[in-house]
Image 1 (cartoon, rainbow, N blue to C red):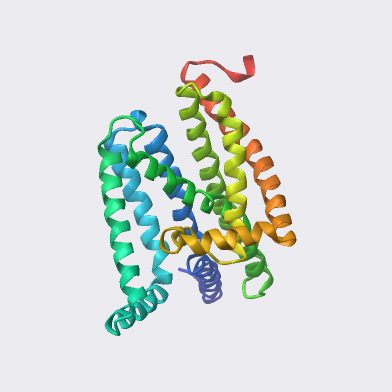
Image 2 (cartoon, rainbow, N blue to C red):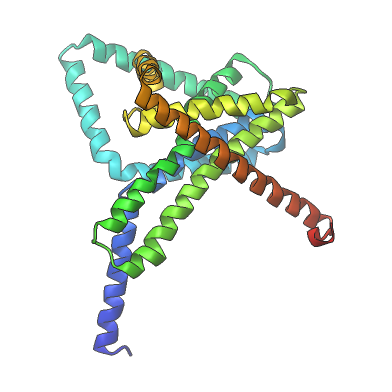
Length: 296
């Protein structure tokens, strides 16, 4: 039986941990991880389809969708308000709202056709739908390294004074650090899968140029997402505005400098994490064959 002071301490402990988790789950972690897992999932479907069984593919899709639903929950009121505004615009006969709904319906139809086609396909043959999947992969890929910029949430959470020091050190910081690491690792694995595909197709010489190009596109995407507050969905709903803003960004000195620094950071971190990831894969390969890496 706990003494009153022990009971009070336990209650205080649980309250502090609950506050830390509320801060996390009402914020960005699960939703941003969902956005990071989308391109990773697409990379396996597009580039390693022959190596994935139908069962594993469905399990992975269910897990990703579940993460997305949980991550969307805190944002649901805002989403519902936006939809109600769209309904009001439709009822008033707003032509732009009608065109938006038609465009969204077309996108949903394309997405369903794409998902069924890629799920049923046993190999990565480059059909029109495969290329559409590749466009979606590139559009959502910047969301994976974008989690690096979410360090600002960690800074705000730790400097707000609303959490005790030990909760920050033992709960808040580790959760955020792990989430950032997982998100960036999703980016690394996505590009490794792409490199595997290029090598299998006999195009290994294009691996490095392709990686550098994607780092550059991701750096632009990160800037547009963090500072301009655009997201990957805007490429589908309002592509002309996205391209116009991107061109203006590259034409301005300060944004271009931020993009350049981001590109360098992505390139260096990707190279480091790629070596670690491939090293762990090689270690597992040796272990399955009874080879001790220390003997090499």
